[in-house]
Image (tube, helix red, strand yellow):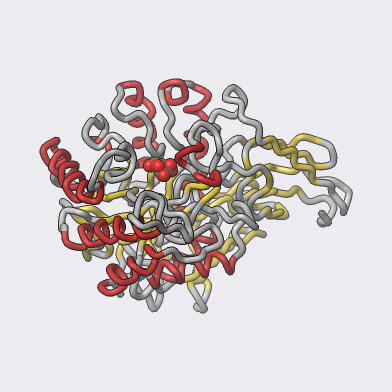
Amino acid sequence: MRTEPGLALRLHFEAVSMLCRVYVDGVAVGQNDCGYTPFWCEVPPSDKAEREVCVLVDNRFDFERNPLHEQFFDFYLWGGIIRSVWAHEVRSTFIEAAQVTVLDVDAGKVSVDVRVSGQVPETIQITCDEGEAQSFTYAPGQPIELAIPGARAWSPDSPHLHVLRIEAGEDDFVTRIGLRTITTHKQQILLNGEPLKLLGFNRHESHPQFGPSQPYALMVADLQRLREMGCNFVRGSHYPQDQRFLDLCDELGFLVWEEGLGWGQREKQLTCPKFKAAHERMMRAMVAASFNHPSVIMWGFLNEAGTNEDYCTDIFAETVALLRELDPTRPITYASMFALEDKFYDLVDIISHNLYPGWYGCEDVEKPLELIVPHIRKCLKHIDSAGQADKPYILSEIGVEGLYGWRDALDGFFTEDYQAAYLKIVCEEVMANERITGCALWHFSDARTYAGGRALMRPRAFNNKGVLDEYRRPKKACHTIKETWGKVSP
Ligand code: ADA
């Protein structure tokens, strides 16, 4: 890496999976164990113009050293530098972050919380879009309030973005924002006061050719495909998403559930101090990175943890409190696999269930498709009677395996036909049932997983519940969804 001699650097990694140490010119400058999450390292100045960056990456599973990652996850954890890396030259003042909170959409009023290190400037300049720079007195910890000239709201139908350029001393920082509010009221999720019906998919960052490192064109094509199927919603399963994907969602008006890395952890992990500390670091990094994206409308954490058990009490309460402190503007949820036994609904704003009626445990059921709707309704009835009737409800996962090209005379399990018939029933119920605020089908495209103990349920070592295969070839269900959601949704 070539740099100006005598300047300190800030190396910013968007994600390194799973565990890494960073060295510059042979000296350790940082380490990280949060996988799909951004982090940075401070690099002291040097006289050299050419600096050697060496990243040691370790993707062995080892709970003691690397507690957030587990081989029992149902998705493959690739090893390596999986997202972009930036080197910032650090001058007398460095802008660490500028978090923008919308105060009033119509008046275009926002508050900008600028955090600097190094020399603290007396004033900060902020330029909105193509306008003139405005100068503000700067006091650390005191957000600056301003009104954006020519303010326009952001919404899925009209995803207008404003660009803010912040200058402090010798540094500058550019961020894009969308003027929108997101709240919950009774069973609804409201964007700028208007109720949303969330229709979409879970999506893994996974491709046989590129692994987890998504080319831009692939992300665009995926979002176009989602739009064709009438979707407005993506659950970024099961880790913080690539910032470039969130940028695209901002531009195209998609709504995103952004969540931390997690899959099925139980007592061993959830009560371990080292796990909890790493989980907290990850949550902080996720919120810091994704705060300004208007597309991100809710935070999630710890997919399918053991929420039928008391050992979750501390980590769930602490994580929700942390998320509320870091971002009081977005609702919080988590995807529960214990719909009828979950103990932590009271903590969150939106109730979310992962349900697989008509799939797991149905080998001997004669008409498994008939189980779907009654089970969804039973779960809804349960949450309403468990004191959660005033909260929105998201069906955060539902789906079945369909192997690309697989047919049989009986439209049996694993055929494209069973999957299509199944998802048609789900999509129709989601549209017809007003109690369902949103749905993220499981899932967008087939994704690589481990061929361990679960291998018999995961032919090819893929989770084959995608409506597209891993190369994005559409299965029958893709057309079915277009015919249902695609017909009603803009
Ligand atoms: C869970 C989990 C998903 C996937 C799914 C399945 O609900 O959250 O990641 O494993 O089940 O396919 O069974």
